Image (cartoon, rainbow, N blue to C red; front, side):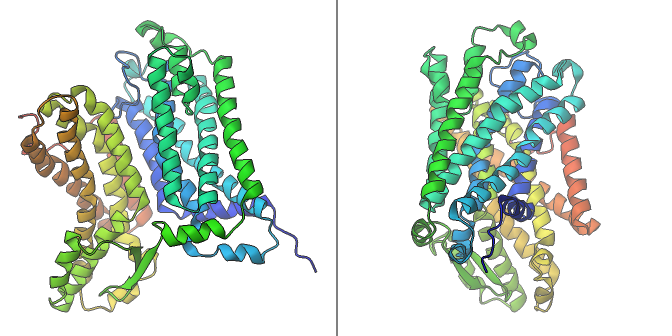
Length: 507
């Protein structure tokens, strides 16, 4: 008897079910929501370059903000697409496809449509955050706005960009079987975006067509506007926009259709398993539970420090094992890498104009990286409190000699060690940007800022959020309380990361 092949619906539903439990999907949605809410409420995140006195809800400003955050968000799109298209490679279950009656093109199309459904739900947080921010913000700074001012950019900029980028990333991952190729394609799209904007500023007609995200098209249509027109005039969504979006979308879908016709499971997957970063090594640490993480060089300082700790009593050995697991866990998370990249891009864009003044630069870095620090600290605080129970390892760990407090302290120290990558990256910007602007960098001031403001504030955010989880003892309620508190702080303009002993501003 012939077993009928399943349709596309179950494949899409399966992807939605899987992504519902993915840390990265929820993190991405939260990033978009808080980025746009921070912009709409009080400009804590500036998404529009050279906006000046133009109200945040002006049609021109909304179009620029939505196009810009969508372009920056392609880091997240790449992560989601890679998670879906390379899942079978990572779990080595791609061979099961050969034993099912499901045609390969239908299988791949179902996975793509599932990815697109997930991305659609995530990117809906952009208009949701804007609307919420406009409602919370000062009416004088927000200005009047209409629903059409949000819906038109959503339909003509955000949705086509998500579809075309997802199609290109999905095709690249399916053909190569490797995450590195998806990243290279993403870098190429970003390069086209920046080149298109640069050519448009020089008045060249090719500029708008080179930009796959549509930012250069909006800039081209409004290049002769003064501040009054930017504040009041609607964006002319002319035939140029429709032709541009149709051309790029058609090209991306053609690449996807070719991939659906020619893709076969096996060859690309084997290459990826042999050479991609997905290759992992499974070990058992002192806690007795199996861990899986990317193989890291033994020459790392943390790896060298871990060896002497093995000779300590068992409770301290358990704490050392949790510390080692904590920093490795953070550094292998693609979601954390995506947040760091987004934080650096946002901080760099807002710090570049004032990079010649070290004090002003560090204040800009602290202000514009604050939202990302809040996101990282909030998410990892919840993971620290609930990870063991979520993976059903809490009963096993309770039988070990170390107390729960010792284990939690060790893992928290490990997570903070890994999360130090964010303040260290911001410190690098504090030194590099003045040099790039031809000014003299003040490394000592940047170091005082990192040690006195950025790192302590980051640790305080993590520990404060963790304390809420430990007191409330409900993951959902604690997350809601913590996120609501930080969102309220952003909306009210509170300087949650400022510290008087930091030394920034006195360079």
